[in-house]
Length: 451
Image 1 (spheres, one colour):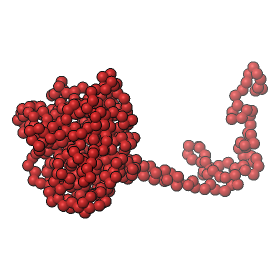
Image 2 (cartoon, rainbow, N blue to C red):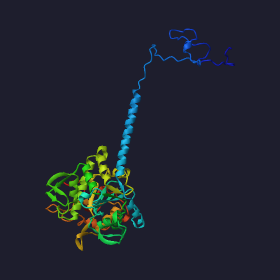
Image 3 (spheres, rainbow, N blue to C red):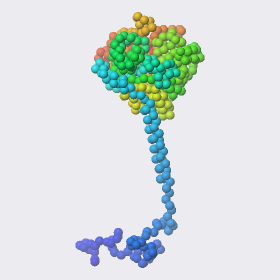
Image 4 (cartoon, rainbow, N blue to C red):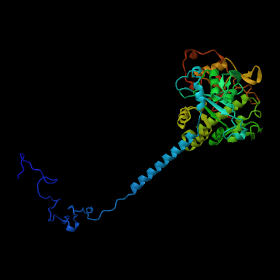
């Protein structure tokens, strides 16, 4: 048939036209040296489909076997990545499982939600840090376990909303306060009373301590953490110790502390004895011990920041393992993710804006071995922190003998007892990062113990 525009024909092969092309020789004919003979009868399978000849290179040489090492390399990389992922998950699970969730405290606080203070400005946080002197849970070497625990150290940590400052306020354990009616750990009801602050935690646990702080300060406690002796010791060991300077040698059997005079680095057990020692250092007051604790914690914060621990995975893991293994906290922080977000938000706070102070206090009028708040200085401090307004610290006055002439909080600066400033009346919240605001005796993390 003749092809024409009116009657086109369909070609039989990939090329137009009929008959074999140079690349497709007709059966039984030769078309140059590359032509192949028709398959032998023995090479044709029963179904009539000829077997394919092995592919050849242009020069006719047999093909080389493909290298399979890229597949093995890819498989090896996949195995390594899976191994790392598995290891990372295992480490995360271990750290996450270390943390004890304080469900009972949360349940107890929910009963008193109506009487608790309202939350502060958005993103500002207030965390109650409780150093427990429990002898249970691995702390038996420090004394017999009688089933109770006291708040050996209590600090209200305020984090500004812009995370430009952190203010840690120590609460003396012998401070006379109004403790609300609480449910004791043995189930009995404890009536409201004026008594020592640490009784709230000792007899009715963290929930009673939190409610006592909230009633005293008017500040809502967003989170709480409880750490024991072993936990503190492990944290100090994880950062390879903290440097201190001692003007004279110390020999305190009760605190298990024996140290020479001079500059030295204290690790776990000695560090614990240093912050717990009372009668062998200074005038033996609990207030001076709190000042020493603040200086030590400031030096600890400074070392963590200066050594880049928070950004170094090989350094941060031992620190997290030490901290979480002896930590009890509320549900909001009882996970590695929650703690990481808290630490990450504090990472940019310079050491000069990490402040330590003690509530304005003096000897209790009815008992020199107890403390009471100094007013109106204490309320001024609490009011400003509740509104996320700035406060600052200044070193307490010192005598020629070295120790402070008076306990921190005895002599706040004149500004600290002034009437409410215009920004407080207006309810504004200036950033605490500039270090302005009334000054209270205290220190900052950038002032080392040896400076």
